[in-house]
Image (cartoon, rainbow, N blue to C red; front, side, top):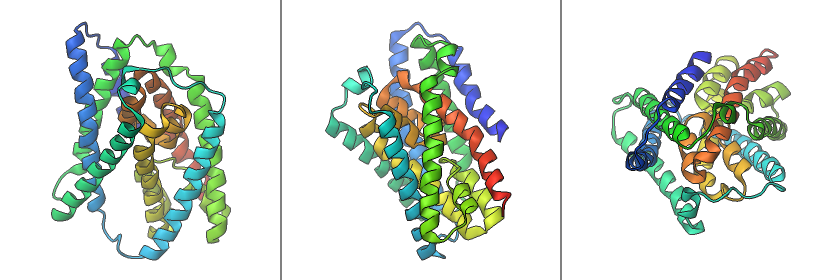
Length: 301
């Protein structure tokens, strides 16, 4: 767990240690960063198509995933909207100024379309024929390195990155609202309180939740946990560009733990480099809390 987090943070801080003086090079780096977002999304779609046995227990999975994802993400959005009600809109940046409302809608749809195209490509390939997980990790490491360079050359200090009150409040709000949503969904489905809280405590870390919950509660709930957190990431991909300007906390928090990695480039693309420290800190905290909380709740099984 901690090794995974360190591997994610290392390229970010390595990039932060590199100062560039060429404005042209920085502009090209920003363009390359935005293009790599689409590569990672396509690889995610291909990986989704490679999952085995999703056709079994479809009805139960759909019911569980739809209720948990709907209740959890709904409570998250309501709580973060309430948290943002007195916060001023984000200061305009080049990224925010460049996109109108309809352009942001188009950007969200384009990202979802890339995932769907990757899924179709994955269906045409033999399962496991591509090392999707390895490629995704390397692409992500490179992307985080590029983002680290942009953070350094934007004038951000380490204090701004590591000590961020906004991020702490986002993480705390997300944890509590996720538990409320999970307990609501669990009550409707007849799950115990510890099952409900375990299913709602991954905060988007779908690879980990599927493994931990599947090992304790069986493959059906393990698959449900995986898909529940995957739905969170897909919703974040669609909604981040739409929410960022006026509801920055909701845009950053909706991705949960993935604000540290997979949704970070989308957050950076939608809100500019100014929101990257907030996303990194909140995602880092949720990544640390997720496995600890899941294992704690599962211990009651």
